[in-house]
Image 1: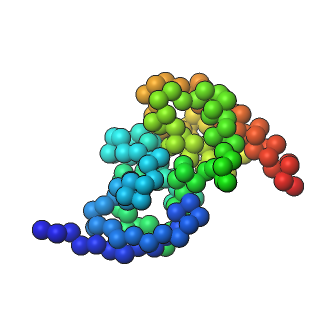
Image 2: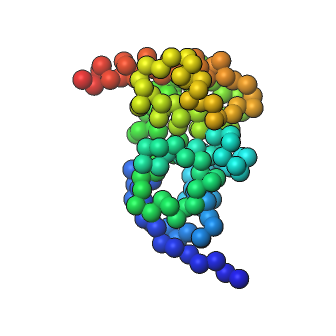
Length: 164
């Protein structure tokens, strides 16, 4: 039995994209098909954060969302964070703080931190920990991740003051 396909059109990291998706295809499967591999399916239950993508600026578990729901939406993945070869301040902070070991969870953490800092540019440590509680790091780099958030806050403030 063949599954039906649906044509969708959306914006992926600033670029208009068209795709044919199966009715049961999830967002991660579509991103893999399009050669975007930063978001990864790990638990398959939306519990670990490795599959995080931003859809219209809101974090979603890409393993749980059907690709067809992207029609007309704006999607941002980790690949959309750097601009013209320049890393986002959050990415720079992760490198400086050594906030990753294997790197498997890193894209999801960076996307969540981006969303957090867009909503609250100066969160407390408790707010950071609460916000990131849906992302798991099997390597245990949590102290470095918290340090990276604070570094990113400073980098964003510096970047914003330079562009004003």
